Image 1 (cartoon, rainbow, N blue to C red):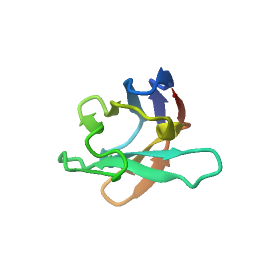
Image 2: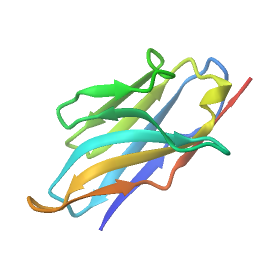
Image 3: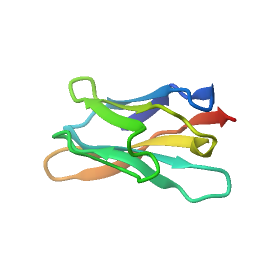
Image 4: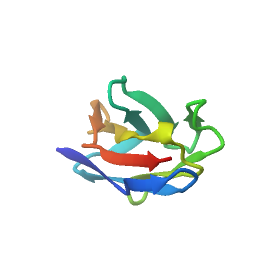
Length: 120
């Protein structure tokens, strides 16, 4: 069984910064792509940023230039550095990963979420 556990959420004023972390634990062969999603109250979950095992990244237009996704493959961790935060960034942030259990079987896993609140 694989667990993704997020940390680093909290309350911050507009213009401030937060760094989210997510660690994968359990038994698996390798982690492929990792990503951060968010879901604001009353809205659908949306992709914020993603990173491949090789380090290629992509971002939602709304966070480009403000957020940076990175990962540490040795530690099975992914990070989201969030700068210049805006009230509209307020949401629950979820870690997501494509995990290879072995060479034949892969699956997608979600964390439990961490809350980010940006006050104006």
